[in-house]
Length: 73
Image 1 (tube, rainbow, N blue to C red):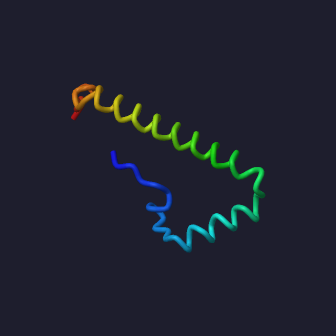
Image 2: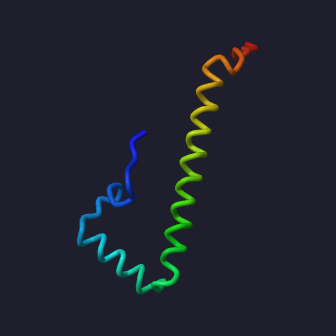
């Protein structure tokens, strides 16, 4: 699994990222930004863990987990 940052996903360059950070600073204030960043990091961690768990469950079930289809023609 390739790790990508939000900046890479959204194709932000240096000046664009600075504008976004300044906007966030103006919108939320300096005191709330660390808490928001921490919450976003925890959310990303939980999302990754759920994605890994789902992939693991799907790989364990395999193609034979569902029984053969019955045809009543």
